[in-house]
Image 1 (cartoon, rainbow, N blue to C red):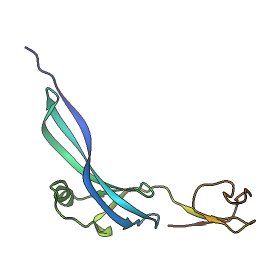
Image 2 (tube, rainbow, N blue to C red):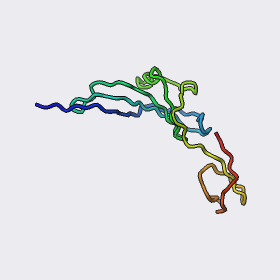
Image 3 (cartoon, one colour):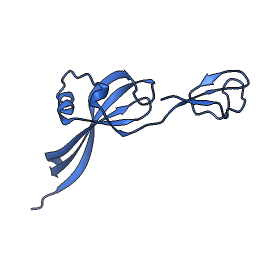
Image 4 (tube, rainbow, N blue to C red):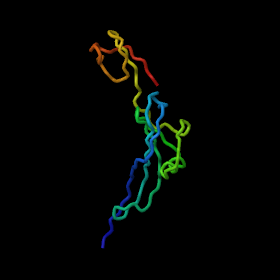
Length: 131
């Protein structure tokens, strides 16, 4: 007789989406919550789970935040949770967007274009950072 067992780190996306204005980039987006944990598996069936950490990712810029296990457990259990900015601890800031304005035609864009999508002129040196 033989046993197949192992210890691994798993990551699961939870059924939670909340619309918000991003505290990192100022754009509209939504919070998406995932849980990361270490587990012991026997015959590929998770038996024990420990070291849970709940992360929130912004859909707009990709910033990642850590939330408390109490709030994460409520979300995991299907509870009605409204995440506030004070609940989030920044782990990694996502892409910072900048507004570019074409000197030729005046078109404004916050995408990472090198050329104006309206007239084709080169976009350079006239960026304004938006946080």
